[in-house]
Every structure is written in structure tokens, then in C-alpha cells.
Length: 451
Image (cartoon, rainbow, N blue to C red):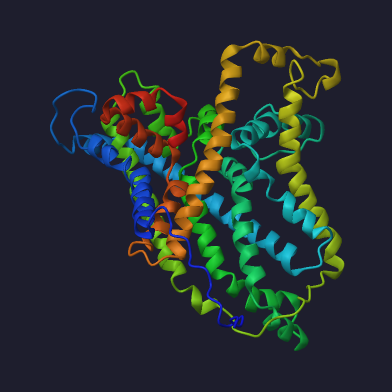
């Protein structure tokens, strides 16, 4: 007598090669070693009276005394906080506005705009800043055109407000993605009910849509503020001409350009930036802890009714298109054009100054070709390895019963919110203290990839 389908036994699950507990502990320990490990020698270096590569030495707080007694350090903090505040306000407001227009209105080409607005975070940040410098910098192509021919003043990007505009255009996609995700998950029935009751579009946005966006706005604001504090390329490329120094550029110049480098003070400054970044991440988690207060509960929603912009549809479409043209497309074209001309100036047509000598010099340079190869290896191998490891850590954090799983989301966000100069200094000291392994990693591409 054959067994019915209900009586048939299911095959036993295959035994995993690695026990679950070992996988959980191994993932957690590796995350802690990679993220927290380099910060320990950084803290130790900030409390010694001499660099870690010199024998002897005693613990002292003298590096902190020297750092806090330097007025240039506090001036750099003032510039940094002003820059970060302006950047955060502009990026969050702009990103939220674009998210609302793309997600909740009948804006022309809204899906296309939703993709194009992400370009600044997909393109190399250094290239974008150089493109801004070529086009909108002092003596830039469009700066000279607007000033000399149209007699219109442009915002000087070598000032703190100007640098904040450049950084805001680069970080605006972060605010857009955060708000767009929140709007996509939110139930639109409340907005539909308000409109059916006669509420004007502005009233619907101010009373319903924006309050539901509050957790997303807080999340984006804290993350963008933290990333703005960590900015290094903008103050080095745009602020040097006006002697505008940020904390990141202050530490960079003290480490690399000083006649007598002071690793202790640099490490102390890096620790201070680390404390600020940690406080901002903790604040972010506390603010998002009350996110449930802003969740609307309802049944399965049908197709969303888009807000009709009416006579504002074409002006807002044109305004968003002009924003993308002048902040993304023009700098990219300017940077590309600069590589094919002797000099980029509005006084002479570019086609009369065409040259391929810049590219020929680069292609004939062995150092440049080697740097391209190294960058490609880091981009491919590093991206694949990082994605796989982050996916594994995410599964442990959200799909396991591991006792320390709640610490993983905070730790995994730490490298993104920590200034790159801090990570670099931390890994430098870590490699210095780990003997032959550290010596090999410090002089190889794999050490850079790991950092």
C-alpha cells in the first residue's frame, strides 16, 4: 500500500558545513575587528608623548592640550559647523522637495528626474568638484561669461556658502532617497481624504505629507550633517585660495604639510571628530526610535492619486531641469572639455584650442596606467567582497537570534559616517603595530582595499 502525499516524509535538511553559531560569532567578530580595531591604536596614539613608531614613551594628555590651545583648530571647527549646517539645510530641503514632486505629483518626466537626481552620488566626488571649479570657480568658464558679458554676479564657490552649495548638490540625493522611500511606503489615503474634503494642496503637504516625512527628514539631516563634517576634497580644492580651513583639512595639512608633523595632535583631533560622529549617530538612533509615532495604519491602498500641479507643472519641471543642467551636466561637460583644450576660456572658442596632448601625457605615464589598474582592482574586488560581507552581516542582524545582532546596524553605519581621514590614520597605526603583516598591508593594494 502506497503512502498518500500527506503521509510522505519530506527530505531532511542538509547539515550546514559551518554551524550557525560559528557563522554568527565569526561575522560579528570580523565586523568589530575591521571597524573598531583601527580606532583603538588611534586612541592610544593620541595619549602618547611620542609617535607609535618611536620606542619608549609614556601616557599623557599633552597632545590634547596642544590641540585645544591652538586657535586655528577652533577656527576650523567654526568653519566646519557653519559649512555643515548650510549644507544640511539646503540638501534636506532640496531632497525632500524633489521627492515630493517625483512621488506625489504629476510632474512632467518625474520618473526620469527620479533617476537623474541620483547622478551626483554615482559620479566620482573629486571629478564633480573639479568640474565645479572649472565652470563656476574664480575665473571659471561660466563665471567669466556671466560676469563679463551678462554683467551678472555668480556665487563665489571659494567661500563657505559657495562650498556648502557644492556639497549640498552632491549630498542632496541622500535626502531624496530617504524621503522617497518614506513616501513610497506611506499610505496615501489620508492625503486623498483631505483633498476630497476640500483641502488645498499646500495644506495637504503641510498638515499630512511633511509630518509623515519627519523621521526621514531627521535621518537624512543627521547623516548629511555627519558627512559634511567629514568633507575633505572641497576645503582642499576650493577653500585653500581663501585660507578657509575645515577640521578635516586642518588635520590633513598638519599630518602631511607641516615642517614638523605632530602625529599626537593629529590623532587627538581625529579622536575628537570621532566623538562628534559617534554622538551624531547616537542622536540619529534616538530620534528614529520614535518613528512609530508617524506611521499611518490602514488597509491595502490602491493606486495613488497624484497631486495635480496645474499651472505650476511646467514651471516646476523647467526649474528642476535647469537645476540638473547647471549643477550636474555643465560641470561634467566642462571637466571633459577641459581635458581636450589647451585652456578653457570664454575669450577663445574651444574648437580653436583643441589638443590631445593631455591624454597623450597620461597614456604614456606608467604611474598613471598603474594607478588606473589599481583603482579598477579595488573597485571590482572591493565592491564584490564588501557587498557579500555586508549582505551576510545584514542577515545576521535581521534574520537570526544572535545575542549581539542589534549592535551590527550601528557598527555597519559607522564607516559611512566616520571621516575618511580618521579611518586612514587608524589603519596606518594599526598596520604599524601588527609587525610583518602590517608592513605588508601598508605597502600593498590590499591594505588600501581593506581600509
